[in-house]
Length: 245
Image 1 (cartoon, rainbow, N blue to C red):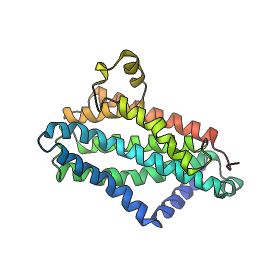
Image 2: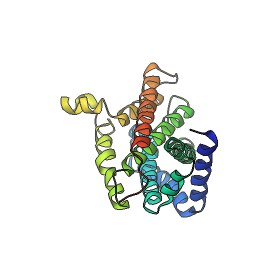
Image 3: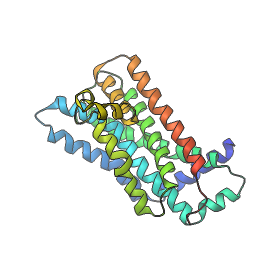
Image 4: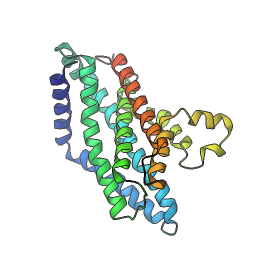
């Protein structure tokens, strides 16, 4: 890997995003709109909004980065751009890490806007630092980017890439503890939830919601999410193909 080639990839991806202001606006504003809607859904129950809203601040970046990365990578492969890039002196690691950096920087902006609106306009009440919320959101964005890069190798069209969302993300959403405590689920489902990274994301957000200090559980949750992200990035580099047949 070369830092120069990695950062060149990051700049290229960010440049492509700047040329698509409609997509940028949607990615930044849709999470905010959903949080506003959620706030008034739980207008009479602010505690429920605090719990679900803080969790969604970590879940939104994972979902959006998964979609954007999987579709963007697949489009570059089907158009032949990826093949031309890999003919140049650029390794798969340069490409994968460059993409991860670009989308993670974009996710920082998304998470910062959503967190700011939730905390200062919608009255989200958390005991811990907003920076801890942003850290989990960033780690989730990195995980979503890694998953998107990984699944793009197995999709032959953009439609197939989108279908991986209900296959990989929705089960985690149902089992992460957002809708029901994980220890009240059937034992098999509880065991499954214990190995899903989104469960640790929600747990980390809950730690910030309940505690003003950086707890050991929060550190564990952050390490698990980041470790899974690095592992999936490595798998994405190993399975990256030059073109779609």
